[in-house]
Amino acid sequence: MNGARRRILVVEDDQETAGQLVDALGASGYEVDLACDGDDGLRRGRAASYAVMTIDRMLPGVDGLAVIRRLREEGIVTPTLIVSALGEVDDKVRGLRAGGDDYLVKPFAFAELLARVEALARRSGTVVQETILRVGDLELDLVSRTVRRSGRDIDLLPREFQLLEYLVRNEGQVVSRAMLLQHVWDLHFDPTTNIIDVYVGRVRRKVDAAQAYPLIHTVRGIGFCLRAPA
Image (cartoon, rainbow, N blue to C red):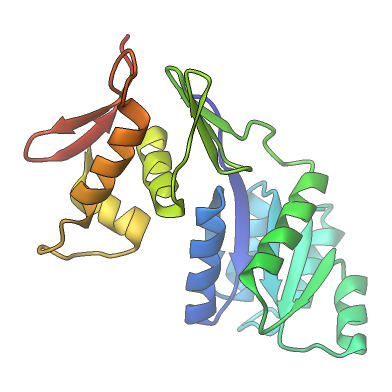
């Protein structure tokens, strides 16, 4: 499998907001790391290369602006989106002067957040340029969220795309129904649902129909595996 996810660091102490950010960014092709306070955000920001960071201003421990300021002083220039409930002009000016690259006021529309993050990612020196995943003759474009096989466009619904992306990222590995339920639907346990089989069936019909060989295989009693012939 070729391609790699763009990494993003979310620094947010509100559990609900953090979960929403992680879900929205993950569904848009990012590999998301989460820090729940300023100290952890500072540690992670120093230790890893990210395409973008989103940082809340008001954090436990080191506040968001101090995190940005310290990282800039240490030569870390990762593009940073400040996310804050403080929306006065002076608040924005202080954020940008501390080293932030953009400023988004809560509450916000996730579509706007994603657009701002993508704009910052395009300027980032740490962006991984490969945004295409390939297995055999299957190709997933993580930016446009499109799928092609043997040169033919395949129309997938957003959840179907997420499911296929997860299978592709785990190419050659057996993925259980529980893993799909957790990573695609964010559900940890539901023994009664058949949603996995329904969606895998839909994706399989779209991806494997009228093709030279199947990519999605059922592993009886365990789950599924996506692989191309050797």
